[in-house]
Length: 160
Image (cartoon, rainbow, N blue to C red; front, side, top):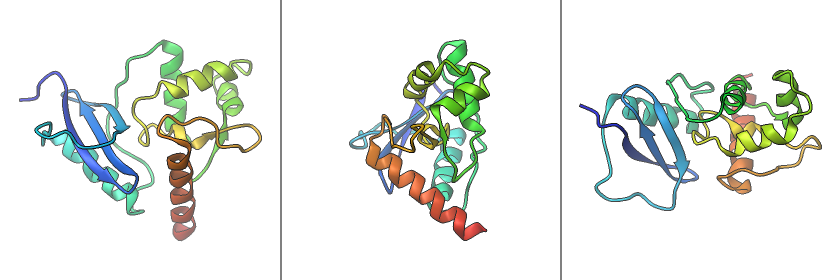
């Protein structure tokens, strides 16, 4: 039986990832410096998440199919839902996301919501860039953002 929140760790090509889940959804997926001993659970949802991450990092998965749940404002949740629809291997600007939400003036609010995303990679905030193509903030670090975008671009080319 799952506790209120279980966690496990996955060692990705970008370092350790801490994954937390409720009974029926992933609630957090963030990079961390190290795996914490004795904090590991093999629940079905966590095992499924690790499997999908492995497939993503080996170029076999382009869209995650796992339930996610984040706590946030209604606007933040709308932003995160839009992020889920950004196709693998593509990027959009913060302004594009604001337009998709029918709030073209809400560019900064989109950026703030993007920064509050706690389910990186699955909710692909790394696919949002500056209007001029610049690699703007990514909580996981700009180098990781560049790596993820390059990984997706290379794997997209292999699939076409």
